[in-house]
Image 1 (cartoon, rainbow, N blue to C red):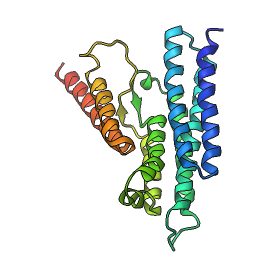
Image 2: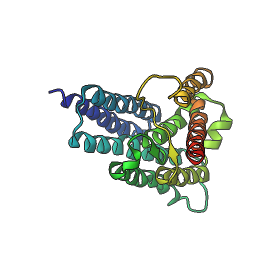
Image 3: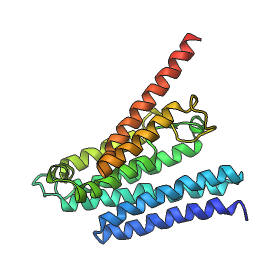
Image 4: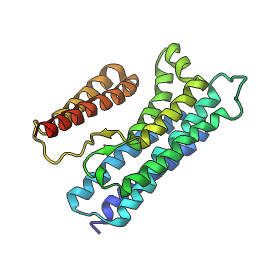
Length: 238
């Protein structure tokens, strides 16, 4: 029974993603975004429970990737597709440009498949994790609903949405090392940059709310750059 507890939480991740897709196609992008957030919470706890209970299994690994594909691959693509529908139409390419949203789903599948067989990603990530990309996309409808017309007009631009979809898709599979939030211990010195990332994220969310999410993703890249540049420097000195 113990080994099925993390898998049950993974299934809740998948269920949240399925509900989010329904909400998105119904035009309720706010609840679709919340579904991604809830799925991300389940995704965090299934891994944590697997480590605490030592309930690792091959089926759990595959199930996690399948659930992530729905919640952090297909659902974000549908949200972007619906944002295309809400944005002012353009004369050139209006019929096909919105389908660029589903490039995110394709590259999310490639990212997850690559992660499952890449032994280099046991402690850190190579390429943007699908949950981080999905949470960034989830912030868009919330920013539009909560902010002034400037941000809404910027996001609801078909060329921006297409360029964003392509850029984020490439980052999913890019050979860029990024830190993970898997703590081997709670020692401050060993996890300094992780603590900086978490504390700065919490503070930004408190002050800027949903508009903080894009900034947090940028900080995530910068912190990772510092982490791995420092590690490379130490190795070269040794």
